Length: 210
Image (cartoon, rainbow, N blue to C red; front, side, top):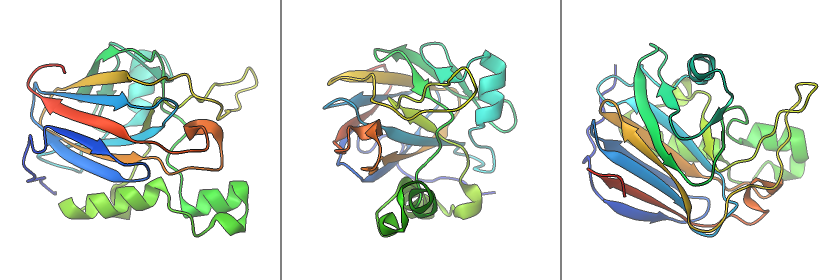
């Protein structure tokens, strides 16, 4: 069992550069707002119970419980123990991905060619930021992709297409327990999830919805 001991509200607001990681412990009842500053930027997101990080976000439990593969206002992010971690309380974008996963050197090489192997990826960001809390590869799991547009086709295949976000759109989550949040402001340049040009996002933690 790993317990996260980061300062729960410092910094209250941070601009996360394109391709960079970010993390915070968000106390129960507090809010986290994720703002797409320039539009069409994907934000990869993992969340853990800050008191016991073996309890972490579960995409299968979340999708099954809400009967929908997309997240929006009212969606509850459930843990591997089927307990609520965070709830989406506001969303001006309208739909967010639970299926696309995080890019990695391996997936980039498979999808886009071996010449992409050296490119930075979300998996690298998660590992680097998670290491601050004693987390490693075995602690990574399926993640949320805020603002990323991954439609499900009639035959069940997934597409990664131009985003539906725009400058200033945001999603706000309320912590249902003390949670550790890891973010990778996605560095992907090989598909349209970032409009082929990663941009900055803003993270705001506060007692009330920002």
